[in-house]
Amino acid sequence: MTSLLITNIGELVTNSLEYGTTPLGLVKDAAFLIENDQITWVGSAAQSKSMAADSQIDAGGAAVIPGFVDSHAHLVFAGDRATEFEARMSGAAYSAGGIKSTVEATRAATDEQLRANLSRLIKEARNSGTTTIECKSGYGLTVFDETRSLRIAQEETTETTFLGAHVVPAEFSERKDEYVALITTQMLDACAPYAKWIDVFCDRGAFDPDSTREILRAGIAKGLLPRLHANQLEHGQGVQIAIEFDAASADHCTHLNHADIDALASSNTVATLLPGAEFLTRSQYPNARALIDAGAKVAIATDCNPGSSYTTNMPFCIALAVREMKMTPAEALAAATIGGANALRRTDVGTLAPGSRADFVLLNAPSYLHLAYRPGVNLINQVFNSKGKK
Image (cartoon, rainbow, N blue to C red; front, side, top):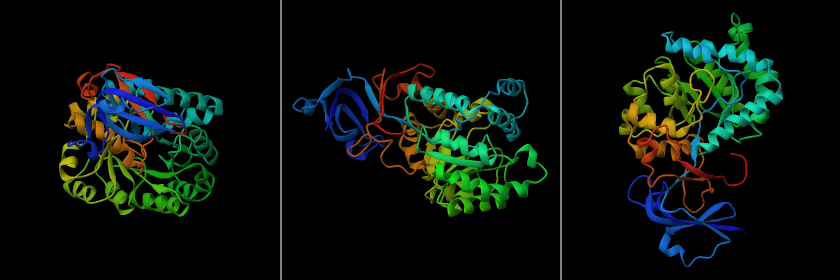
């Protein structure tokens, strides 16, 4: 057994009410013990002085937080869409159609090129404090390319999502029903062994409610767990369908009415908000305040993708959530850690308490407040990952 003691922590975010009166479970002047990559004890720095460990790290009075849990990312692709971004910043509207240019580039790329780009993005995310990340397919849209995308993604994370229902590819533009049939048969057969989740982009320009239900049912029959892109571009049935299927999360949630908010609040489905997408498309931000005040579970994720949110930086998304979505700094940090864990239905990450994985971040700051207070500044000192895929 190997052990590591982290001590002299000025402020520890545990996300456990057992260790504090606030939702973040803040512990001042704290310490915790790690044994075999799992936290086994949390207490005061004074108590830790009598503890023995194989090694020790002095935090020097800095803050320690759980590693970020990025529960929505599209990382297996080739190329970029910088010219599309320039057009949007010049006034062009965002639509789902831009995905098709990335599909062309991804299909033309080699496995080695896709693997190298994925590795680069995973490294970026880790350097900004992310220790658990979800990764979707969705830029191949053929049986071969969706399967290899998930196979490559599985090399980096256990949280892999089959998103063959991202958009209808160009070759099926007049044969949408045939593409849905392909997804629910041959494509699912090939992809299911490499995926944990099934996702559908249920929105304008993508898949309608009937097709969404058909694809989700087929994925669930193959043993995959549901999640959903919902209500990003306009109000629709996506959120209600996510709740109907007890999906782990409904992602985007930009256009909601009161019924959607009330339904989310009374469900097990997490509303995953993706402020990077609104920032980079100059779109309306989700109403996080209404969701939180209603009692809905909320997560924040990057939505890293080459078209609408090309960022892997969770602290940036936290700052946006505070500034643009009216979340408090504590709510935003919780959404980026334990909220993301809830959206992946994980109980071993997003917290720092006995039984949690030893996934944590040592900040170059005395408090978690600085993540939103100092936007754009790299406050990540060290990132610690427990063993195994993230």
